Length: 208
Image (tube, rainbow, N blue to C red; front, side, top):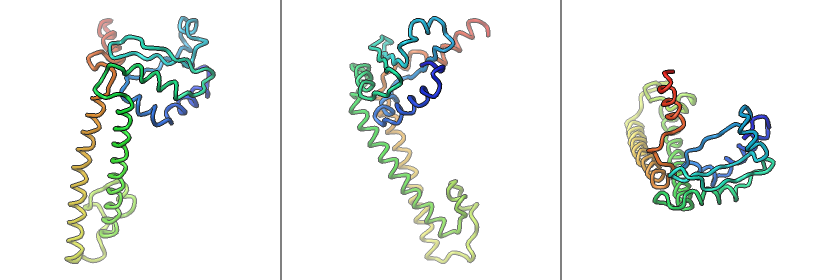
């Protein structure tokens, strides 16, 4: 990209990431953004080809380039590029990964909804201020009820707290499932140094 193109760049990036399929697919790639604005050589080579996507496979081999003229988002072409880059890598085809990850997001959304319902139930029972409830503060910090809880309400509170504990366990399992889905589909080789690792190594070699 070329930051000299101003608002076109941010609008284009937002448009790309608004495409759910693309946003999910990019999770299994190590993504880097290069700005040619201050690089004379890069300007000469890529000046008339930005924005340009360069897709590499897990071995670091260039798979293909995709030029998107005039910053007009083309998610179909981009997905085609990503599919090519994933072939032969990972345990899951890209389309399968996207479906599994969408299922994960749906399950996570349902779980968050259940947590919200329990938070509101506890809020009504204990008189927790809405701001405290929204922040997930423990019952101990809640505004005490006007009178002690009845035996029935104490039983209700225990039931809510048990449901909260169950949901916390479900969330842990769900997060573990997400990591497994990502691990099964990732394209980049974790043994290859990241950009940050490369910078650290260069700094160490130069003594700076």
